[in-house]
Length: 430
Ligand SMILES: *Cc1c(COP(=O)(O)O)cnc(C)c1O
Image: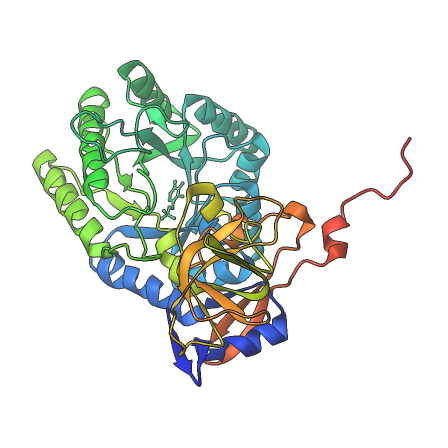
């Protein structure tokens, strides 16, 4: 996070957060452009420039809007989308179609048609049924598409209990049963409408241990070897997904090198032994690119001190702008942005304004003494915050402001009440 404290006030990328809250209102998502760019350059330095024939596709689902797509494009990364909406946003931003990859376990026909019309770079196919759908669309449009198969690595959890999301019982990917994966691979190899490039896996999110990636990789390399033996076909691309963890409270964040160097070492060794050209290697970081670049600003309202139990400090947002605490007990750090130099010696529970008891943003956090009107900041909200926002209780989705070197610009305007009902029919019924 590119932040500092001046005169008791939090500054983000040169901007006074109290002034931002006044100018744009609260709740407010604030993203530091310099912080996003720094993360992108880290990827360049320790992966893209270090190893040739590699790509990093930012997972748009972590935070996607036109401005973000433009930053990602400028920084030379590719983009991983998982829906027609994310694809449409990228195209509107002028993102080069050939640098877009499309993931998802149930891509709709309309979404695939959009992707094929735009001529995106890759579709990461989730099964034979989807392959057949892509083929029929390509046949109709007289086009071809580069594809990878997403597999579920299904590492034996009796010997390795690290894998939770890459396990066989999953809605994502193709299970590695011989009678499922090989017919699918054979169909892709023999198709006149798709070019079969290789294999994709994504083992999970917010990881601090490289073992899941490395175990999944072994499974995939074995598959690459089997494809070579069965079909005499050289896989030319491996996509090892994302999942690189970030620090929300006290997690020990690992470097990209920690994850990627052993992966590359293993792939290089494998390729030499197999006497094949080393496949292209693609990663899909989402959270690690944007999480720390974002903070959310709230205004403190109602304060309730339940004697001997807990002190609730309510803010003007909540689970509608950050569902992660309610959805998976995610923990965050916060502070009072106008009292940064005061000792954080009060234990408070920061709750939202939604009609749900689970609408808690920070349980028993340490803050300076809060009063109504204070600006409360929650850190590291850049990933899966705005992108998961909802209109529950008809709360408007907050504005998003991009800051850089003391300048600020609204990249997404706050929803108005009019926006919220704009698609509702006002006709009399029947
Ligand atoms: C969500 C997702 C990512 C990004 O995961 P992060 O944990 O945000 O890095 C990458 N690839 C796929 C297929 C995903 O579903």
